[in-house]
Image 1: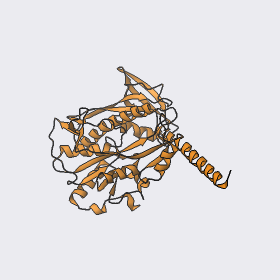
Image 2: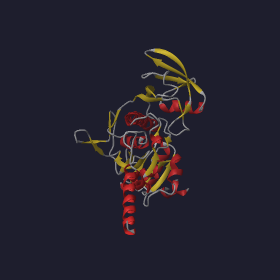
Image 3: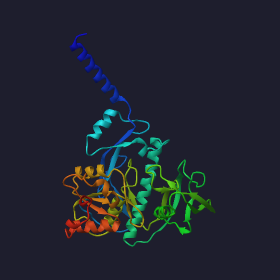
Image 4: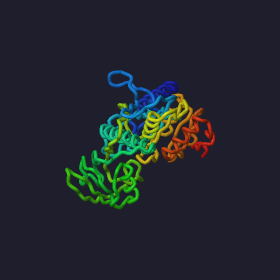
Length: 356
C-alpha cells in the first residue's frame, strides 16, 4: 500500500473510532438551564387554557407588577438513557451546562421513575412549606403536622416507619413541619439515632431510628423518609405547575404568595428571578444547578437574582453579564432585598456572591 493509502486508511480508522466512541453511553448526566416561570403570571393548564400560576381564594388579593420568577434545571441522562460521549464532550464546552456523575443524581438502584416520584413529593412539600412560610412571614396563624409519604429503601427508617404515619415528636420535641424534623435529625448527627413518636392508625408508636449520611451528597444527616406537611390554612392557595419537580422553587412561591395577598408590588415592577428551598419558618436552603439557573435567569430577561447564601461559593465567577445576584439566607432577607430593589434605596449595597 502506498504512503497515501496508509494515510487514508489511518484517517478512516480515526474517524470510525471517534464516531464509535461518540455513540458509547457515558456514565454522566448533563444539567442545562430549564424553563423559567413567573410566579406572578399565568401558565397553560392541561387543556391549554391560561391560568394563574398562583391562585388565592378566601382572602383579599391585590394586583402585582413585574416578575418574580422561579428557575429550573433540565437534566438529560438517566440510568435508562445515558448520554453519549459526544453529548458529554459538547456539554463540557459550554459555560451554561454541567456534566455530573450519574450516581450523584441517581444513587445505585435508583430508576428514573423513582427520581421523578421523589421529585414530585418534594415539589408538593415545597408548595406547602412556601404557603406556610408566607403566612408565617405575614403573621397569619395556621395549624400543621407532617405525614410520612414513604420510607426510602436501604435507609434506617425503611422497616420501622410506615406510609401515613403522623410524626408527633422527635427526641421529645414536638414536630409541626418538615423543618422541625430536619433540625432534630441534624442535631443528632450522623452515626447516632433519634426517638420518634408517631401516630399510626390512631395508636401511638415509639420508634428509635438511626441517622446516616445521605447517599446523594454523603454529608447530609438523614433517616430515610419522605414526608409531606399537612397544613390547615385559613384560606386556599393553589399553585398550578405540572411536570416540574423538586423543592428549589419554594422561596419564589412564598414571595409570589406574599405579593398576591399584600397591597403594592414587592419588586416595584422589576424583573427579579430567584431560587432556593424554603422552610415554614422562613429559612432559605441551598439547591442544585445554581450556575445553570443563573444563565436561565439572564436569558429570561431578569436583571436581579435571589440566591441562597449557601450556594454562593458555587456561583462566584459564573454569573452572566447583566445579572446582579443577591445573597439571602431567610425569607426576611429576600423581602428586604425586594424592598431595596423596588425603592432603589440601598440596592447597590445588597450582599452578592460575586463580591467573593
